[in-house]
Image (tube, rainbow, N blue to C red; front, side, top):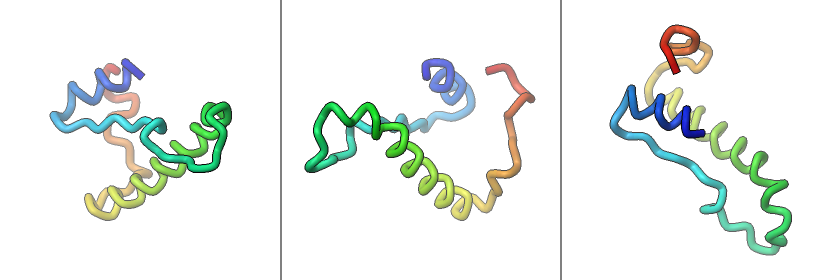
Length: 71
């Protein structure tokens, strides 16, 4: 994750780090959070991606940096 944050800081001044610990899960035992976190993050990032794709009018099928710059 540090590599991803470092990459983002090199290309923009406004990076948001998402963490599932901010998501309330009423009724779910704390021991299950580790199991559910990947699913929760998938839902969060999928929804965010769809929103940003529309707002920025840029298809996420197009890669701007992938394999073109040093990470």
